[in-house]
Image 1 (cartoon, one colour):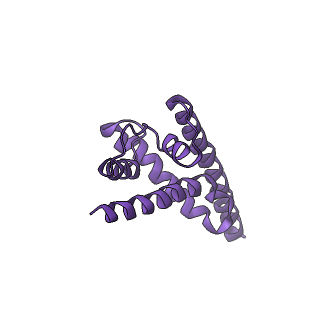
Image 2: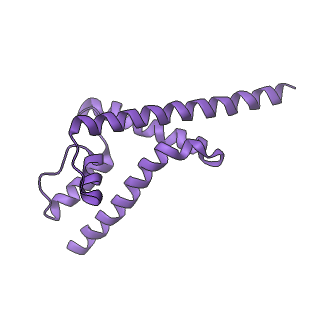
Length: 131
């Protein structure tokens, strides 16, 4: 049982961190721009729609991962996944308020970039199709 939880911890650390990095940077690369818009929309929907019932900013990946970590004996997990990552891998402790500002600010910048490049691409395609 414990080895399965450790594998799940490893997988979720890689998957969730990759999701976060892709949300932040995927809009930059033309081949991933549309998929990045989708992952951003899923993230924003989770934070808001699911957040309405579970608390604003709710993330099912964080919830699942923290549940696994608790089963592995981890206690006093922070409210933010960013806080968890920084403490676990860098040994840095930041306030929940700062973590939330970084998280929401990063998502807002990424969503703005993603919307801009996707609209630009879509509008450019529309103009080409009209000629």
